[in-house]
Image 1 (cartoon, rainbow, N blue to C red):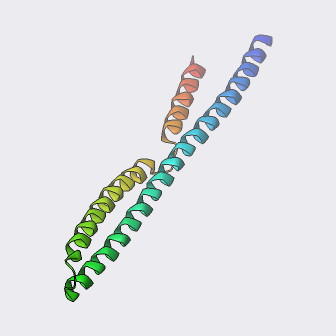
Image 2 (cartoon, rainbow, N blue to C red; image 1 turned 180 degrees about the horizontal axis):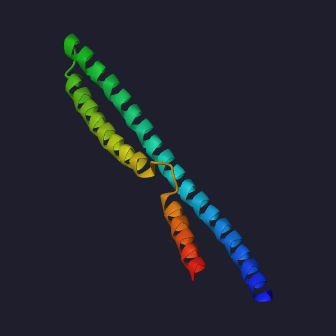
Length: 126
């Protein structure tokens, strides 16, 4: 009887430790995904700002073109094009970072818990 009691106590302690470890792993995984989502959102914001400034420069180019006072419109158009390219690149990088962070579920931890449960079930059958 004491051997069985000791085994039950050991199993209880191991399960408790395992659950705590899995919760810690889940917290770490979610923190990492949150950081990626935040970084991706920041890149989206940077892309929006670059697009805004590109639009402002393009408006300035159109105004200068219509006024035909100075050939500065060509320089403004080049700057606008460069800003639009920068916004496109930032937007793609931001999209990829947000995509890598979703879904916000600790998938690795869930898989690990399932494997642990299967192992415990297998040992219990023996």
